[in-house]
Amino acid sequence: MIAFTFPGQGSQAPGMGEAWTDHPSWELVEEASEASGRDIAHLLLEADADELRETRNSQLATYVVSMIVLDAVERTGLEPAFHAGHSLGEYSALTASGALGFSAGVQLVTERGEAMQAAADDTNGTMAAVLGLDDEKVDLACRRADGEVWVANYNSAGQVVIAGDPDGITKAGELAKDLGAKRVMPINVGGAFHTPFMSPARDRLRKALAEIEFRAPNRPVFANVDALPHNNASEWPGLLGAQLTSPVLWRHTLHALDEAGATVFLELGPGTTLTGLIKRTIKGTTALSVNTPADVDALLESLSGASKSGGVAEGERLYAIERLIVSPATGVFQPMDSLAHGQEILVGQPVGRVGETEVRSAFEGSLQGLLALAGERVTTSQPLAWLRSASLGSP
Image (cartoon, rainbow, N blue to C red; front, top):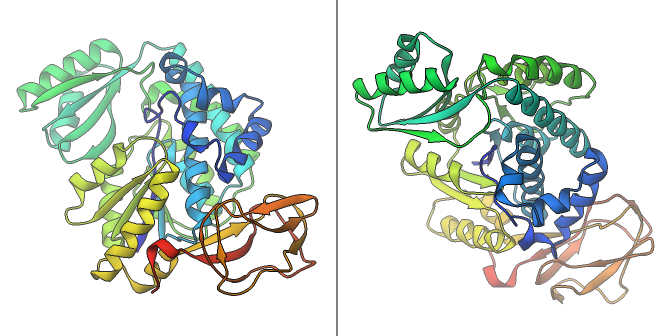
């Protein structure tokens, strides 16, 4: 039972798109630029740390990288049972589940980032991580501070993030240490996210949410606000609006996923923050991060190896050794006449055309069959053929 998880703001890094520029999934960058009216390639390849730290940039860049990684993983045929995302990552999870279209997701994330940036600019807010103290005592420290400071993220046992104005953070931090906290670490952000300071952003985001069509997710998506799975499309606008001023119940979400049967947690997107939180929260589970093309190969090898030792269900192993060739465009599909079952396909080898666009394989393996008929009209990213990876063996 695989859970796809997606990181939030703070996971970004300069040049985080560099490894993907020659990968077929990089085509999403152009689509995201058109939907957002922003130069996404610049953010992923050229923006420095200071530019990426701006909320309006970090959120959009992180979301697009997560979608690039997701697209690459989906091309292998790997499928999850559950989705969840940390804060911004909830939009990635909803897109992955089919509840949000990619362009709609880009538009919402763009508006969310702009709204949160404006709210942060209008308030003097910041955040800090409290380490080594129970959730209840961190909440108690915030209430005793009697100021503008609140719990913003319940990340894992012994790691809780608080947010508010600097005076409130300082006082709550001192009280947390008196209650037994090992350390209080300032976080270099420009706002007090997931607190009442974000109320103006919530009001602005609600207007954007009302204009977007949500669909029922094809797999349960666990929400930050209540750590529960939601399958009803009509619930998500309210959940996403409430998320901006409510604490992220990430630790509770991980326990809920564990109880639902998740045994493999994959973090898709920049950084490895969620992977660390998962390992600290759910003991004995498999937690892996994927943020480069090389990580995709390592993931498949890991899952295939786990299945041989009994760690992953057989059905998941079958997904792990199969890879999909997908359409690079919309048009009529014409496969190469020479294609035959069992034929060895090399990386970059042409396998047909969609309209005037050549279809080349992004993977190496033996051809197991075509998933589209000659003369059939196909759409971008529609699977056309499937391969069995020679490097991972046979089931």
